[in-house]
Length: 143
Image 1: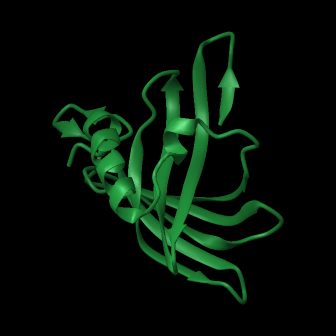
Image 2: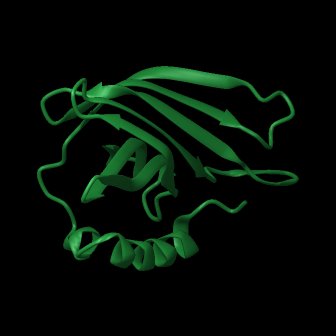
Image 3: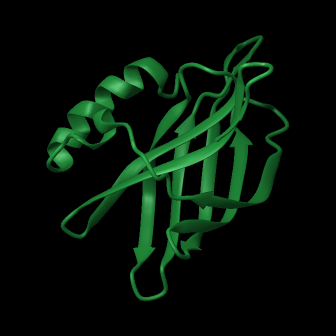
């Protein structure tokens, strides 16, 4: 995330990944505005190849609101791990927008040096699911 301290705004994306045995799961966060609650979605359709380091996933978020209701943003990532960094293409489409215009950009998402302990306290997927339900109540997609 990039923070503009002069305006108290954040911009950018984060991917939080966990694994339990061979299962890979996580959250996608995308922020475009005032610092505060960051729109968060669950990773779905996750595919990872440990030999090639290729990773792809989708995530549903609500980034804002239209006059008729919340946005229905679907983000798709395809890329790979390179030295504690995700490099690839991030696409976005708002399913609530009648024009349904897809945007794509090349992204480089670096591993954070410090992670909030609250995001790292669970021992497995079941505890992560409980934690995630609480997160999504506050900042999850509104659709």
